[in-house]
Image 1 (cartoon, helix red, strand yellow):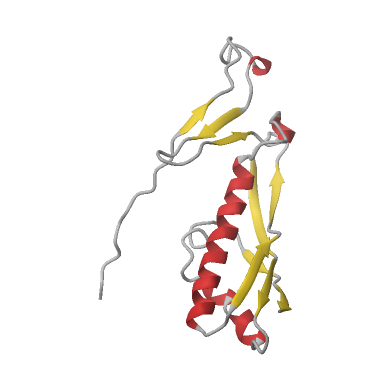
Image 2 (cartoon, rainbow, N blue to C red):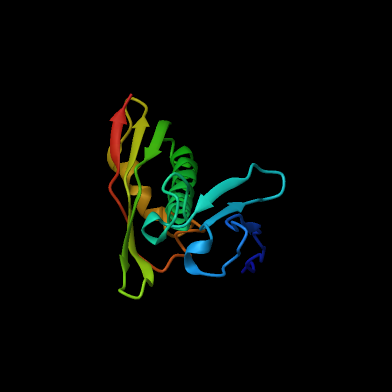
Length: 158
């Protein structure tokens, strides 16, 4: 039996919200930051707007649900190709379900992926749909989160 290969993923996160006073008091700083992965464009981010963040920027919760959705999509495309299913287009209106305590502590309680998948004429839609239930066994992100992920796929035959 082959052993699992260990590997690391890196991210450089840089706080950009110092207005000159640092964190001298709660309203003295912005909840902004950037992801600066070497060799890639920077991603400007902020905190959730309910916690004082900029609603025009991505927040950690957006990025987690985006990562989950993207991982699912990439595995779906791979497994569909292996199964002889031709995917012509794929987009997902994923939603993360969360809860916040009065203290401000929060967590995800689940996520629903809602991909709209365009497949080639003559595709067996039951076979195409069954792929979603295999992805949780292989998707790095789905295997790493501590909340249930459900799927509500819609199909367009094109």
